[in-house]
Length: 271
Ligand code: ACO
Image (cartoon, rainbow, N blue to C red):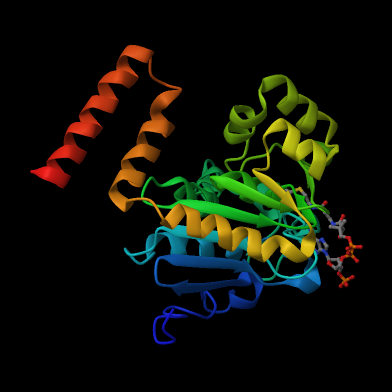
């Protein structure tokens, strides 16, 4: 890829004073965007600034982007929410759970909705999101991996939905994809025990598309991205839309939806 194209929007997704806390790096190289959680010294712990940085990336994603890769710098994908949220002091400039508990009415629920926006856009039909996961993916880290369409993992991966062990529920959009991927019984098992799911099980139960040695993770992701970019863009968008709607529709309704999308494709290709 030409150098001029690389890093079209490199640098940190900036949130003014919260930049260092957000710790999210964003790069665009042609049709590929890469989001990197970049606080390895804190195992890429996430804060509200992280989630607003993610949401801003989603809001301003360049139109040419087809694939979004989400990864973490250092040995862990993400150790989940920043544990300072549990302390009375909280995260500087972002409060704590104690201050949230004192907030009025639906204020905190609104704040959660804003945080979720950082995760929800990764399912847009216009893109395919790929999580490259090595090491720990705990709590919010597990949910960020679940927010992506595909997960390619290193053999040292450990997924853990720790929230119930800490008295919380997983609220960063992770419960639905988890149930869809592994089924209700397995999702209950994973969440309500807060146990760790390692690579072999992740592969077996459908959490991971592929497991590779840690040193091969970047290459495996590159290979998947190349495969994803090899298909027709508009057909890929329409097909993802169909697949995403499939579970909520009857076979009859899905067949109708397929016909509608195909008619549009034929018109676009041959009209
Ligand atoms: N929040 C804030 N800081 C963190 C977090 C976190 N979630 N996780 C790790 N760190 C910090 C550590 O405090 C340590 O900082 P220090 O060097 O200033 O002391 C640094 O990251 C490295 O952490 P270690 O524990 O030394 O790293 P190690 O590789 O041995 O262990 C592990 C990694 C297993 C992830 C461990 O750090 C851990 O258990 N973290 C907490 C995980 C957690 O409970 N997350 C909340 C989940 S619930 C949710 O997300 C809603």
